[in-house]
Length: 488
Image (cartoon, rainbow, N blue to C red):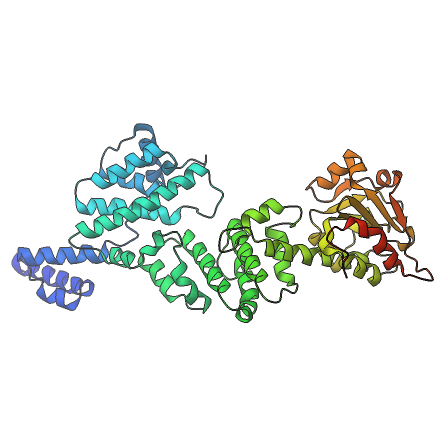
């Protein structure tokens, strides 16, 4: 067969294969042998296939380029520059991150902007953008690394605008990114929140696919937060309807892994929103989430004030007081239900629940035997009492105590009603006992015998007299302690 015919057949085969890559119009107009047509065809291939993911690069090559740039503050060529850009936002095994070092970061940005050729500048932008997608924004990272990530975000926003003006032809992924430049904003996924709340993830998924955003990127985590914020804008009835679903999402039960810091932010948002409801009856799942991820509201007030915020940015006192009331009310009721001698002392529970607004702190003292009870209700009690649980040296295995600080007084109620109510002056307690009560360690030992060795300010018995109930006598004794007035 003549060589000309062989070459002609090969060209025909190449045309056929390229026709499946290029669109029909491009395939018809690319006339082989004409320089202008060939240039247009090559540009079309680049436009379509210079995708957002870029060519995969081995991790060891990226690591070597980052190490060389950290050592020399320069690059040997374009390939090393691109590899350094790919690894700039990665945190190595020693906790180091190139963008955390301000001088190196700015030098790398300068190289990425000044490398000759618009296409290479775009590739460096693409590599740094990929690092931005992978930076662990919701992890506990060093402050310098977090500041470096913020500097990278600002650089990407500025550089995207500059490239958008200078590039004669833009890849499809770059155009798509321009339509979703909100991903470089302070609330990057806010626009997708309402749709996600309706169960429609199509727009967000199209962006993730079109920009080749890694599966472990913070974008999906940010989408969880955006959905939570969208839910918080709902009216009360709709909010209450979606709250169980929102709690499942925050707990990572909806197919997206949620890191602890993000779970905490979502729970804090839910608490602030729920506290603004007209009716704030106790929500069991929300109470459990609050204790697990924010903590006991009267023991960890600083954490609550830092994390649970109103839309204005101020600490949500409504949310803290809401959970404060829920938890105290529940612990008092359950103490007398599970640990009272007669099995369920509803009268004593109701009495102390009236004092909820005046109770500054509360502790539960359980014997070793009570701590080891395996019943589900007892396990729940121990879990919710976390932080205010004491292991006491009770004389009797069933003699547990409820300690309540009311103003300058410590009220001690026993599981056995026959032992009466003991009132102690707070400022006269031993310093060792005060340290134990002030500790945040759970199930810490507390010497009940040392406390009872001191003379109480008063001892009141739970017995009705002919003319008055024990509740009214207790009220009369406690009245001087309450500057806001006696509860009704």
